Every structure is written in C-alpha cells, then in structure tokens.
Length: 218
Image 1 (tube, rainbow, N blue to C red):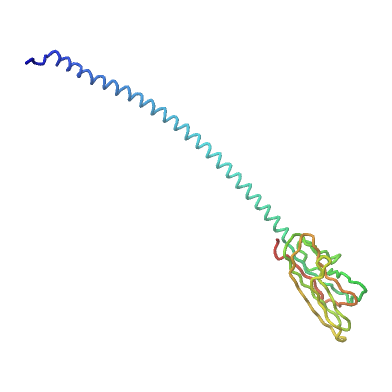
Image 2 (image 1 turned 135 degrees about the horizontal axis):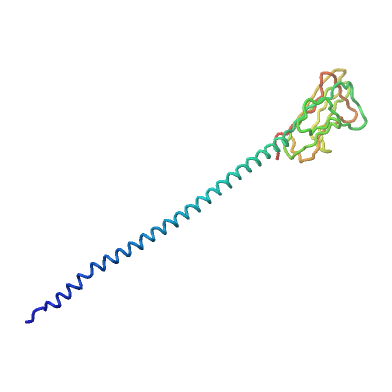
C-alpha cells in the first residue's frame, strides 16, 4: 500500500493558506465600494429632500394665495346677496280725504312711505317691481264711509289676485284688509287699484296701507 506523499499535502496546505489574503483583499475592496455607494446615496437623498421641501413651500404659498382669493370672493358675494335680497316697503295714502269714485280703475299711489329697502316700491306710481325672482308677501287695507262701495284689488301685472270689499251700509266708517303671498319673477309688478264706482277715505290716522317684502329668493 502506497502512502500519501508530503509534497501533495504541502501543496494543498500552501493553496489553502493563500485564500485568507485573497478574502481580506476582496472584503476591503467591497467595503470601499459600499462606502462610496453610501456617500452617493446620501447626496441623492439630500437632493430629493431639498426638492420636496421646495415643492412643499411652493404649494403652501399657492394654497395661502387661493384661501385669500376665496375669502375675498365670499365677502363680495355676501355683500351682493345682502344688498340684492334686502327688499321691504310700507306706505299709506295719507291725508287725502275722500278719493273716488271714478268711472275706470285707478292705481292708488301710497306716497307716505315708512320704509323702502331696496327701492323696489315707486312712491310716484304706487307700483312695486320685483328686483329678484322669489316668494313675496303683500298686505293692503281699505277704509271709507260705507255710504258707497269700497272695492280694492291687489294686482300682479294685469291680473287681480285678491280684493277687499264692503257693501253700502249707511253713513258710517268701515275698514277692511287682506293679504297674500305670491311667487314673482324678476320684473313682475304689484299694485293696488281702486275699482270703478268705489271710493276710499284717509286722513292723518293713515287708514289705508300697502305693505310688502321678500320672503326668500328662488
């Protein structure tokens, strides 16, 4: 039987002994590359972070600007709506004494004005003109000596809506009133007309009134 030769064993030993040095060289080389990559990644991260911070600052500025513009717009709309929807009036005939009768209907002009917010009521013509589409409330009253008929009609444009009326009952004073809510388009007109062959009476006590206001816009 042959024995294993020492030369081969020493050769193997020599080859094995060389491997640690190769390992440490490779490890050191890789560590250098790793450190370089880490440094490069750190720079990239800083650039990305700087870019994100810059974009965030720009977005904050834009949002702040939009908030300011929105606030201004809301204030302007509130102002417009407040002024547009401020509609109310109230007026009486005043010291007219006996008025009528006439052969044709006559629009009553209530020129003793107490309030006319929005300017929708015209005290020269006695006509209310709707400034906006909406639901409106109106009331009116009549007073006379009942020796003659009292007949007043509330008109929307040329259509009679409701009336106040009393029959001749003798020489005494009587009052009556009526009211109604109406849907009006912008530009619709409302007035009170004294019907033919009837009359009203008023004095400093202001017996005859015409009142209206906007309930809400539509």
